[in-house]
Every structure is written in C-alpha cells, then in structure tokens.
Length: 327
Ligand code: TXA
Ligand code: MG
Image (cartoon, rainbow, N blue to C red):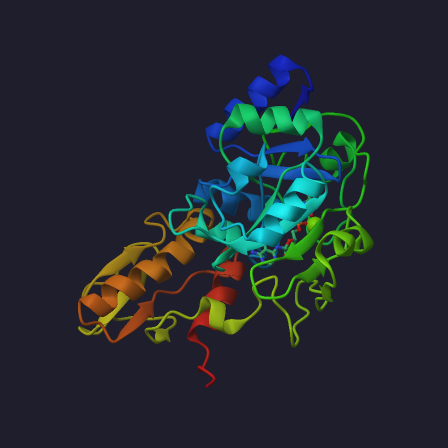
C-alpha cells in the first residue's frame, strides 16, 4: 500500500523519516513529482530504478535544500555559482564534478565522475529536504517510458503499491522537468531543455552549446549523458563475464554463493538479490580495480547475474565493462 501524506508538518516529518530509513517517497516539486530516495543509500537508489522499471542506470538528479548544501558534494566553478545565484531555488539542474569525499552513492551518478544537483523551489519539497537532512535522489515519479506526473494522482496511477508514500503538495506549477546544464567541462552544454529557458541562461553565462538529445538508448557524438559511453563503466582490469571458475590471478565479482579461489572478491549480493546488487555494482567494480591490482590480479571474473529485475541493467553495464577496449 502506498500512503498518501498531506503536505503539512506531520506529513513532511513522516515522509522525511521514511526517506531516512531507506523507503521511497514521491514528492512534488515545481517541475514534476519526483520519486525520492536517500541518495547516500545505494540500496534505496537501486530501488528507485526498480520501482520505475528503468531499463538502464540513467543517472539521477540529487535534490538539496540550499546551494550551500549542494556545493558541499560537487565542485562549484565560477559559472555554477553565478547560475545558482540567479536561478536557485528553481527548475535548473547543474552537472558538476563530484567531490572526492562526496557521500552520494555512485549508482546515483551511474558510475560517472559527475553529479547532477538541483535546489527545487517548491516550499513543501524544500521543507522535506531540510527535514530529511540528506541529499534526495529523484527521477520523475513515473514508470519508465510513461509521461512525467504533475499531481499525486498521476504518481499513484503509475506507482501505487511500488513505493512507500506520496507527499501530496498539489499540482506542479512548472510541469516540465528542470533544465539540465553541464558545467563540468570547459564550455557549458545544455543536456536537456526545461523549466529555465536557454535565453535566460545565456543572458547569465553567454553562449551555451546544445548537447545531443539523450533519450535512453540514443547514442552519438557529443553524448555526455546518460552514461551510455562504454569507457565510463570500464575498470582498468579486463572483465570476464559469466565466470564458472576463478583463476588464481583473477579478482572475483560474486553474486550469490561465491566461487572458490581468486586474489580477492567483492560480493554484490550474497542472497542473489538484484536490487541489492545494483546498489553495489559501481562500488564493486571500483573496489576490485583498486584492490585486485594491488594484490596482483590481472583481471576481474564476474559470476552470472540473471536478466530479471534490475539484473538487465546490471548486465547491460557489465557487458559495457567487458566490451573490447577501443584505443
Ligand atoms: O525536474 C526535474 O528535473 C525532475 C524533478 C523530480 O526534479 N527530475 C527529473 O529526473 O526529471 P530524470 O531522472 O527524469 O532526469 C534526469 C536527467 C536525465 O536526462 C539524466 O540523464 C540527466 O538528468 N543526468 C543526471 N545526472 C547526470 C550526470 N551526472 N551527467 C549528465 N546527465 C545527468
Ligand atoms: Mg523522466
């Protein structure tokens, strides 16, 4: 059962408590309703992908109650400070490099070195973010492939029974998603047009490049999002899939009861749970890369993961990690 929480003090407090213990809570922003989860909790983030039925780990936006709190997790450059000052709180998302000590789960960024951050303007959302005291990862609160929701009822139409609660703050004023602006490289790039117009952004920053549209599955030159590039998932050590045995000079990425042998191992999910495994995947690849190499491993052997549930997205990422390396 999905609880419908009123947008009063008690409702916000209950929603915040649910988020803090790892449950999923949809909440209204000025753009669309978001499907929120504690961004520092990898399992909660994996559960977001699962609830949406999102076929790939498309990176998620992290929501904060203030620019100060957002800029504690990403490196703000001069442009970022300027647009944040002009448009936050509001329907603008900035893609910036993660700080080395950023506590946000790697799965939120889909393994990228950047994080998308936003400070929404909706008062109830702001109260919720303040009260939760953690960054909240939230894609639009619809089933994958369906239209973004702008009311609590829309959320329930798609996600009733799949999430713990929806905080009903009424209809969304903006109704289209936030503008996504990548400021992580030399020139600003518009990754998605949205609630803040390009004209307004250019008045603040000067000319902005238009990024390639990046609907899931659409690849191409100049694509910086949503993590469809093979190299972003490739560890330094070569990856061997569907391992039935482990060699002495390999590190093991285990799923379920681990194979014997190998230099070291990282367990994705001892019980074979794809939600838990999805939450640990990017951490695991990084950990094996660092520790495997240190212990003399010359490759990573990966145990088979079923294609069901989040397994499909896990296998998509693992296949990219194992793909032949281009120059
Ligand atoms: O208005 C909105 O932005 C809503 C509300 C809930 O805040 N959220 C939303 O999230 O629309 P979602 O997941 O539907 O869209 C997030 C977009 C995707 O296009 C994703 O690829 C991009 O932001 N994105 C997220 N993190 C990124 C990153 N590190 N680098 C590049 N693009 C990123
Ligand atoms: Mg969406």
